[in-house]
Image (cartoon, helix red, strand yellow):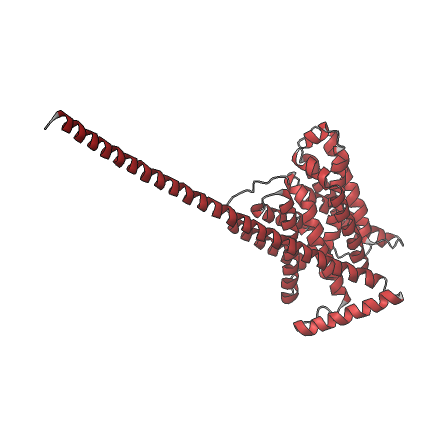
Length: 388
């Protein structure tokens, strides 16, 4: 073979090898591109699924809040219509309301809704299911869950004072008003002690908790010599002790608490997550702390009618704990705690009425059941919350 022929052959082989390599590179590049495109499609699909899931979840939460708000409006309407039923327009509306309640009894096969005192109890319970978790959300995230129990014992001392004055004087002041006044004073005392003592943060709370309950027991023991005092209903809660005045007081206090939380939400959120930064920003932290603790006292006094002194703190804590297991933000925790609180109240009422059990224990047991379900449904031990 000549030199030219060999050169021609080698050139041809080199060209074929180059074409083969180019073909292989092209195939490998195509496979890499296809794999990348597939991964991008999977990730896009996952993001879309997560977005859809989040959208559905938020829609369900908003619908739930609207339903709770509607139920609260109905309960408030009953309380005020019953209050003003002696006036022509309100009296007519109240009559129509009770006719609808009787029809509801016929549909449900019950004998509950036709009685005004049951509506008073249900109205009080529904409002408790809103305002207690609402205030409790701030308390739990500030690690102040024990303050509810403290103020409940302080309110118990107020009830004891009211019993003593009713037995020894002609003053016809409601026991709940006594509890409210003493509870608010106790709240201010706790705040004063916390601001002016060098002890650990929970020491003033513990002192007020034990001290107020001790004063209450002493007063009750002393007052038994004047008149028979049935304090058990205030200790454990009872639907039958929700009076007309108690339902009105709870309605007014609930509207006030919801309004105050709405007006001061940003400030309360600020001091909840970074109190030192709030002080640096010249926010009046002491005033907002006092406002929060006074609102807690107000909620405790109103809730004491149904839940009792011993169990009232549970509605400040348990629904919030359940919401924290599944929520992704502070605002979502607030919404879910109100929803869970409402479910606990309604479920507790059903359990209490159907099985003749104490209302307070039934509501708290239902709330704990919701908390356990939230733990089971959550994939984390503690929610990582944003402040939005």
